[in-house]
Image 1 (cartoon, helix red, strand yellow):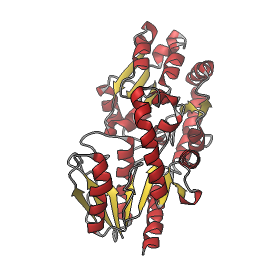
Image 2 (cartoon, helix red, strand yellow):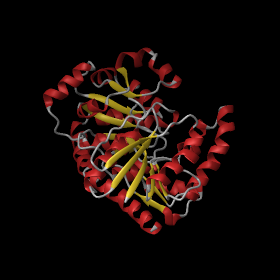
Image 3 (cartoon, one colour):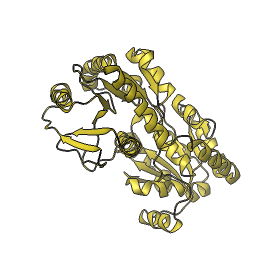
Image 4 (spheres, one colour):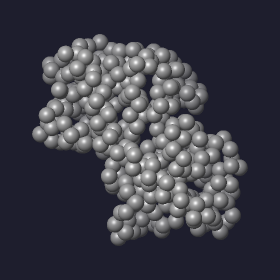
Length: 374
């Protein structure tokens, strides 16, 4: 089987969640299936992150994305003899002989009003939604990260339930609780940190609800707040977040580190007294899984996908419940035994989300689709 894979998410040195997911899938898949050929297809900005005897990279010029998607890519797939195309997002040729399998991670832009307020959004979102419907209709199979995300895809994109496959994400082996203490200390020192902070990792977009946890941390008793600094890792910057960080109480006990290199993330998780994730909506919630796998206790929202992911191994509070976040944050920081219990439960839960299981399940979907073509 020849599997074409759209790898444009590997854009230069930029590290995205989808790019990391794709890298982990291909890292395992190329070894698990040495008899298969993986044809990675990108453009001039793509940086290949996976290599192997059964891995080849094709660079296709991209001057206009829509033309690349709908003309250049299907022509290349046809010439290569690919049996199936795997696209890790809602992009695929709408016409072509090679069947496509898409992973749809979430539908934030459909669900959250935050992404539909600007005049430009209102102008562009309507044709984009039509395109998403067309991609789902054309796809031979649709992979989603959670059952919650699958329900959204069926409800909002009218996807055929028979096409939808739930394949939860996984962490890389780097996220584990037993890292090298000396190496971890070097990483933390580089950021000017000592163990015991409250950690958030992720985007600063409106649906991530970051102001909620900032306000909750600021409302903590001063001594507790200063002992457990709130560390924000990620971005890009947000006006709502920036305004809160300028307040005196926030400035004294909250630090924003910006994007973190992948190699430093495990140590950052392991040094946390508590990991927080107040998101309104998620398709999966990979930082929560990474935190659990690294041995950090987790306090997160009641978003459906997060409840599904944690399986009772985290403390949950409604994303809208401001007093509830302050109370939960204070109670957990004052109760090391409860944090230890959550950390232990999280490690057990995270062990079920292996890269091998994820890759095997995605490959099974690709097998199914390629077999139907023959």
